[in-house]
Image (cartoon, rainbow, N blue to C red; front, top):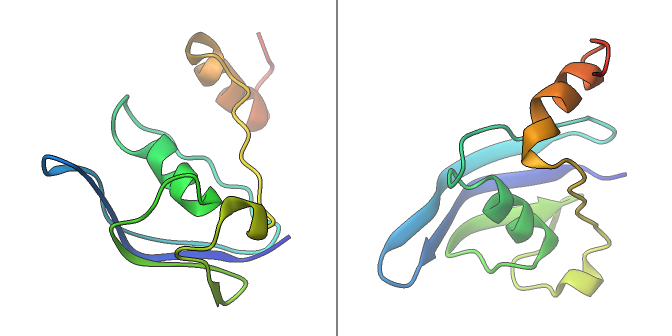
Length: 102
């Protein structure tokens, strides 16, 4: 496991569309984190930037104190997984919090 830190990370697409605006986030080793929000708010873009699948516009991403800006995905030793369909996310989140799954 590793500590992941995002410092003032911004993702701006061509045409001036800002997908992620100065996010600051620290995920400690072995910590479980869920990004929740409406469609288009930057959840997937943020994960893609951490994994190296999307370049950041500004800011710093660190994995175990190593700045990984510009480091290819294969050299980051990190994986991303999405396993819930949109219609089951609410139930899945509830089940993860100890509620019975539907």
